Image 1: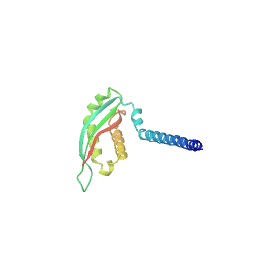
Image 2: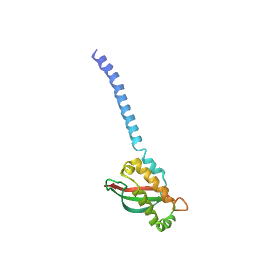
Image 3: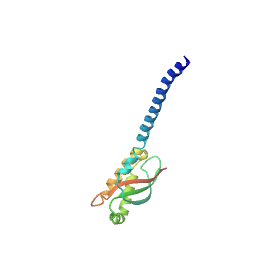
Image 4: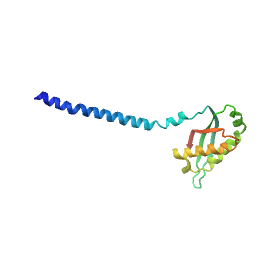
Length: 146
């Protein structure tokens, strides 16, 4: 009789343990793939060369509080020959970026989504000064607001 009770308990416990393990594995895979899906965005881009604009410190647009932004920008480009164009126009590139940054208020740049739109704006406006789209991505390597 006791053997039957043990067997019936095992019949309940074993499927329960299997169900818990499957749920844990499924949950882990869901979280892991959702967490790391943004990493794939970086793998997809073919960025062969990088051009450091350097450190930029600007006052943010704000009437009440004097805030400033300290940042470092790196521009990515595909063609090796484009370094000459970038070096020639370095002062224009930096001027465009400074103008964009000075036109922003703290609310315009404080979230990740808004910095993504800032990067897109920098990309579009810097490419305007070239005959072709030289820059294919913008990276913010340092970003501090005070």
